[in-house]
Length: 493
Ligand code: BES
Ligand code: MN
Ligand code: ZN
Image: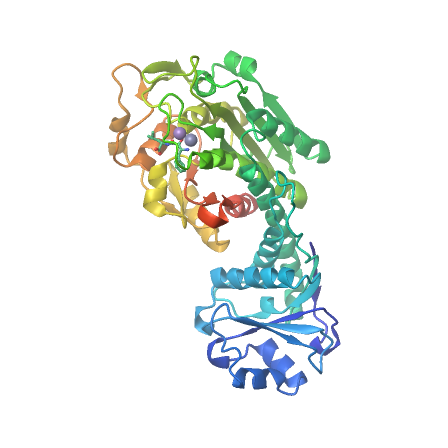
């Protein structure tokens, strides 16, 4: 999608559709009031007629307005002025994109970035706009023989009343547009069925991305290489599957060798049957989404390649398929991790932590500034936080604080849960150094406690995205979260 900033007077700007906001009880934002004047109060008359009151989410189209050079106006209800925060702003942009596509329009002039959004600087208004519009253009089609209607919107002009904001907004647009593209990458991988999106597919996609971008170097480790590294825990997960497990390592280098990298590690279980601890059948198809952590890593690397910031980032994907078979790991089996800790696999359905722990040991070699893992790790996190907040657990208050704040900044919220010492004993085992499950209580926390045994050598945070990575029901599909949060963190730290 193409974004251009316009600061020329509204009456001389040509467009297929000018998008204007109206607050609750017909209160007009500054730009809308200006246009109303140019239109000799045509908008006021429409409001007086009661066609739209300004309630949040309402919208109407006005054709052939006389006095400006727009073919139409899309008037969007913004609700209460004092309640216009960045979440609502993003929501209005989303509605805007949907309506513009519904009317098959290919260009529009959007004035919403000139709105007074609470605590939101102009550059963020641009960033959120580009991210929302870019993301709204995503459609899943690959495995449908009847492809849906393509989104028509290609060119978005942003009207800025304040010329001095141009530079900041441009910077925001570049970031948001890269993030939106990264989200689309993450969503596509998430949505692909498990018979297409296998561990090897992740490897191929990463290599293809590196081929297109000279800043990116990719290495794909197969089972033989992982065996040599001693990754007995990761390998135990894919043991029952005919698909080969892979560790995908992507190095994005935008800065000097001396700059220590931030590292992101994604859980890439391309299908989670539960293994011998088999999951119930109903809704099991959704376990194709058990690689959304890995998809968010790939999406973030793609976003970095699009934006090319001067930073160093390493993305790692720990990928396996969790299947039952006569070769599969059994409850009670003891495996040895790369770190040397032995693990009693009491439940083969707690497999995410088993692939992650070896990846978390592996990344020590990069002397990371910080390590963030992203995983659809526990059903307990869905119970605790639902689909709104991702779970955030960390061994470092500074890192956790930053992630919390960045998450707020880009509408990709997370909420911290504790990993205090007292929970650790739930992982005691009679037959190994550690068990892979911690009982019925505090499931999200004990999962993070397990990971914390492998992350003592760097600042580390864990994002449990079990509730936020995909939507259920009619809108079933991957969300692209938490690519916005990861990008915001990486670009600012
Ligand atoms: N991938 C699942 C977690 C999950 C479940 C995510 C439902 C989203 C929706 C994970 O591998 C798993 O099965 N976790 C178990 C852990 C338990 C056996 C300790 C769980 O949450 O039930
Ligand atoms: Mn599982
Ligand atoms: Zn899983």
